[in-house]
Length: 280
Length: 259
Image 1 (spheres, helix red, strand yellow):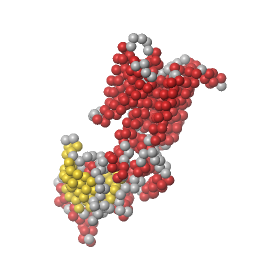
Image 2 (cartoon, chains in turn orange, brown):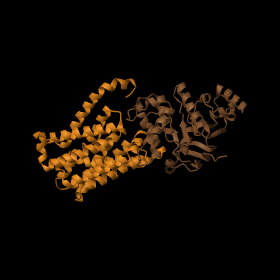
Image 3 (cartoon, chains in turn orange, brown):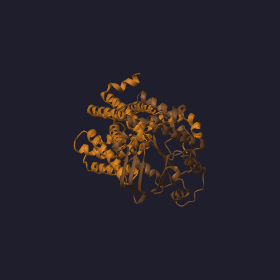
Image 4 (cartoon, chains in turn green, red):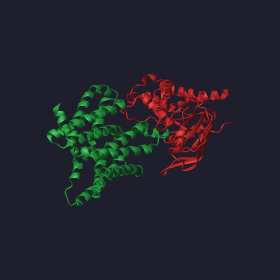
């Protein structure tokens, strides 16, 4: 018991825990839509692209979260816009926008004269340096995303399953698409502090993918994903504290182990699925 | 006579450089059961998508239920649509009744959750297409024919007075095809206007359409079957390909004779 409680006497660990919980829930919920729409590259792309936003925030001496969020949301809209207007597929649009933005970020950072600890924290994740004001913005962002998801849930699901039919029945398909992109952008920036922008995809994809192995009901999938995500974060956080490894890495590795376990658990259902011609 | 539910005046559609439909004028009275026939690539789907407002006519005017089909009018119009059988994501975690409930999403509008009334409608629609025993199954676990019924049930759940079906019977076995056409007849009795496309003239054996539109990049002919199902018109529709005589004509001839 002491093993679990000891780290919590430090305020930075309390912040870390609350921050990671927020991130876990958010990533799991939105990750479910990301996995079902097969757009997992979006997490990676927006996370990497957000580097320029963080660099700009740093140069302006503003709150990195706020600037990062606004910048990344704009990036997400741009990806959506490019995909819609130009003859490029969604992953190509992500590739173009994220590499451009990341190049801009690298260019800006290379011009900075001193060593920027805050920014390296974003690269590799430094959950232990979440401040009180960071936490406030994280929780506010999380509430916004969860409320939006709840409000537009049936439309988001319909558009993910059958976008054209959703459009025919009067669902504002383009709005839903941009809304989802906007929410993913928020989540990516919020998660970047914990996981580092290199590993954001981990919590966005792996818990939802693990849940996907275990159920074929959507609401259950979201709940299981949240569970897997929370468990990954908690285990990862303690591993990070006791083994002194980067929190992003330990959380990502735990999530991957949980994915392997759920895959093994789902293996019993495989023969039936094969006989129905799945995965062909 | 009641005003037409669908009215096309000199509608032409060019997709890129491809002329998909040329100068189509057509008036469909409400409550009719229309068959749209033509070979593959003749513009049948384009016609349906234009009626839905998914494609804008390059020139000409279109009116559906008294208004121009646009994104804004779509929610109020609630046109039922069953697209051509296509690959769906078989692993998508939704049940058959979830899919049929999607038919209610547009009617409910934003911020409204489905209630007991909607669940009742879903149940009725599943019964109508005869798959109420599959309600709890994941959509991907169904066979092609069962999936098609589920998608028809979803369109029915919109409670629309206009239903468009794009090749609903293609790729299905004969009994399933027959049951789909029986359902069309039932909808006709209820006063629903239906537009059904097919490239398969055997469909005419199963179902007596009130009107037939022959399409081949334009409207070849439109009218009651006894006027339309002549070797000349059919040959013209199918680009000069000689159409073998089918039972359909004998049937429609005899029906024509009765009338």
